[in-house]
Length: 322
Ligand code: HEM
Ligand SMILES: *[C@@H]1O[C@H](CO)[C@@H](O)[C@H](O)[C@H]1NC(C)=O
Ligand SMILES: *[C@@H]1O[C@H](CO)[C@@H](O)[C@H](O)[C@H]1NC(C)=O
Image 1 (spheres, rainbow, N blue to C red):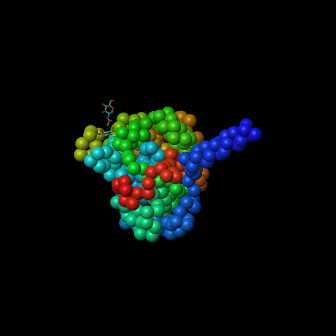
Image 2: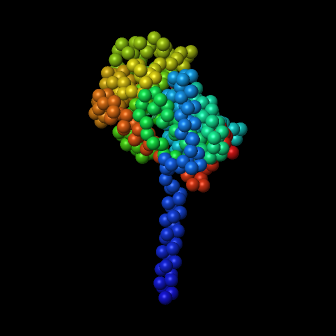
Image 3: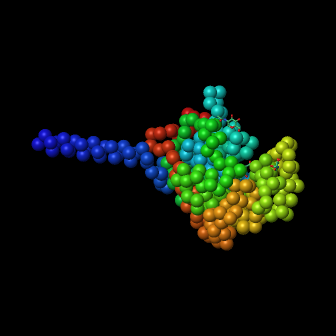
């Protein structure tokens, strides 16, 4: 009798433990806000549409914000926190300073969401939906965004410095960084296709256009015209990451790579005689396989270490903790 009671107790304890574990790694879900904020999707989409109508590049900038959020301690809205007197955030970290942009637009989108559902939707989720809408509006694929992320109360400049891959990265460094986050080599190649939109500063591609040999020479010459060889006033001059169609989310990024016309070193390493050449070739000849692999990879990137349950908070203003 006593022993059967104690075995019942330990079964109960086990069930409790399992429930606890289940909660602490609570799953994101596409329907997370369907009761608490039924107009969320329309609200975000119309705000993204009007931002892109004002400035086409902003779609690229918003997509990149989500990447830079997710790679630094997970998709937790940490990139959106302003520096405070006591802590340095991610906005002024090396990979973001004078580079990441679109924060004012995120503020606008969040304000529109707060108007319809005050205090309900996290900044991390607003960013996830905004990234998807940007891609779709510019002609790329759509996908169902998983939701339920909560917002970090802190940000780390040091983590942003070390977690976002630099454009000087080798293929092996990129694959190991991605794999540490649960992303495959195929995800790496597909996600890099985001560089089919947007712009880069001279300082990020100078060494490639002046010193590398696996670059189309007329392409290098064209880019050299607006990017002087020495550090200085030309550092911030912009060039499109995709020379063909920098505002269309298509597969021309991969066609460029096959022709040695990748702008960044970290772009061309994906097609440089290594293991990823075959994936690049496939995407360069099949828009639809790129589109579906990109969508799947975005969902996996969005799954990186979310705060859920009672962790974190729902920030009212994306720039500061409540
Ligand atoms: C593979 C590693 C990656 C590296 C090394 C990298 C590096 C860079 C660099 C250096 C720039 C130009 C920044 C500047 O000059 O200010 C840039 C721009 C951009 N990146 Fe990446 N990136 C990577 C992956 C990604 C991923 C995964 C995404 C999104 C899914 C992405 C989206 C973008 C976009 C859209 C832009 C243009 C932003 C704009 O015009 O404002 N990148 N990236
Ligand atoms: C991050 O990098 C920037 C610029 O590269 C540097 O000034 C800053 O001190 C770094 N911060 C930390 C905490 O490592
Ligand atoms: C090209 O390489 C040379 C030799 O390593 C170096 O001195 C020079 O600064 C490099 N130029 C650029 C633009 O990176």
